[in-house]
Every structure is written in C-alpha cells, then in structure tokens.
Length: 92
Image 1: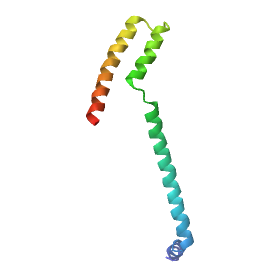
Image 2 (image 1 turned 60 degrees about the vertical axis):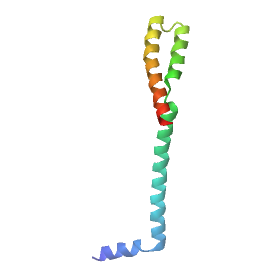
Image 3 (image 1 turned 90 degrees about the vertical axis):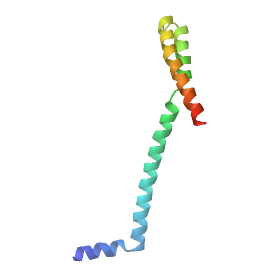
C-alpha cells in the first residue's frame, strides 16, 4: 500500500505530469510524422497509366520491347487509363 501512495504522490507533482505529457506528445508527433511520410511516399511513387505507357513507348523505341509486346501493354494500359479517367470524372 505504501508503494501505491508513493507512486500516486510522485505522479501528482506538476513537474512530473509535465514530463509525462511531453513524452506522450513527442511519441504522438513522431508517429504522425512517420504515418504521413509513408502516405506521401506512396502517393509520390504511384505512376499513372499514361506515365507507364510513355516509359514502355520509350523502351519500344530503344528496341527493348517488340512491337507485339508494346501493343499488348498498350491495350492493357488503355483500359486502365479509361478506368482512371472515369474514376477522376466521378470524383468531380
């Protein structure tokens, strides 16, 4: 029982409460920074289908892709681009 009274008395001091709340604030700030940074990295790394198509077109032009491969990729990305345009127009 004595130990509980000592702890209660210790945490009732304003200085101790200040340090505890500052520690909580610091932990929450670091956590929020980490989460926001991860979200921003994910958004910045997301390529649109148009960006991907441009890269594949460049690969075809350099001979890294055959014309048939490029047409297949273009068909798939064309469908994605239409879906992106529809999604973007629905959010407006």
